Amino acid sequence: MTKSHLIIVPCHGIWKSTLLDSNEVNLGQLPEHWYLAPFQYEGNDHLAFIKHSLRAIIHLLTSTNIDKSLLLFSGSQTKKSAGCISEAQSYYLLTWKLLEFFQRNESNTSVLNKISFDDEILSFLKQITDLLKVKFQEPMSLEALFTDYINTEEYSLDSFDNLIYSIYRFAQLNDKNYPTEITISGFGFKEKRFLKYHAMAIDYPIENITYLSSEPKPLDYSKQQLDKYFNDLDFMENKNALNLFTNDWYGRKEILMNKKSSRNPFVRIPNYQGYELFDLTNLTEDDEQFFKTFIKAKMPWSRTEERDATSNE
View 1: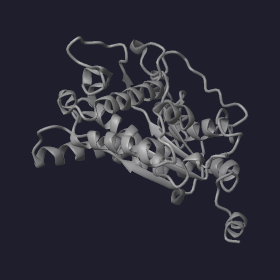
View 2 (view 1 turned 90 degrees about the vertical axis):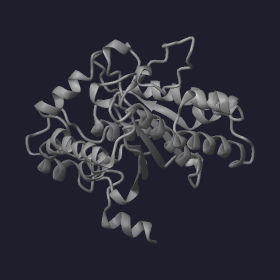
View 3 (view 1 turned 180 degrees about the vertical axis):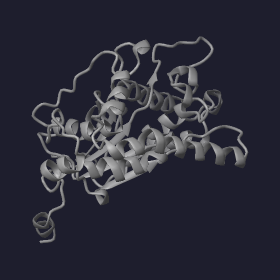
View 4 (view 1 turned 90 degrees about the horizontal axis):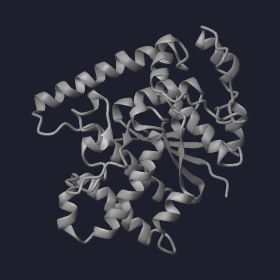
């Protein structure tokens, strides 16, 4: 069956899958189980990564027609110290392992309590386990879930890449059919970036995008401390992302390109030839003119009067 619904989990770190501790199972529940940037510790970002993954799977399992949906973890090999392991691959493997662990120990509260996951993560795990049992005519195995409905996109180096490369990867896996509906499961403070900047830059209709938000969560903060934390987060999002993408829609100018280069220690080159819909290699300085000339009303998903009339027939 041809798929039409793309679910994206933008990845932000790499799980240390080989880290073993005789006293602790490694399910990504501790910050030391991850390769993290310094700014990712305060808000326990690693737990948000897990929530992004689980919420995406719940959305997949509760979609109107799962056979028309594909979930992609999106993120490249961004950490030299992690070796040639992509963010996407690590999320994929961790989420599978986490669900296997929960299924084996669902009735063993003493084991689950030792993992110290918060109630929201445990609730997500239970929802997924229950859906796999009762949602379909026959119970669905984790193997079927992860091999038939979930895959990876392993070239993205920033949020714009997460969107456009996931669309290309979707087409690559779907007989060159592009998604007519997109769901993104990620940080709430990045929603504006995806919808108002990236979707606009590729002419993807915002009304066809659903955004699922899970935020960072500092522990034991007072209301005043939390307010400051999230205000600082918004400030940094504007400074380090929105202000830059305002003047560089496609992430091709010096500042954003340098960021991408710093996240590409293994010099990965995207392999989407034949699926790319516009050429960014010779992008002019005028992004708006480039958009009007090569993208607006020209994408398979673009809203045009002709397509609107056809869809309303």
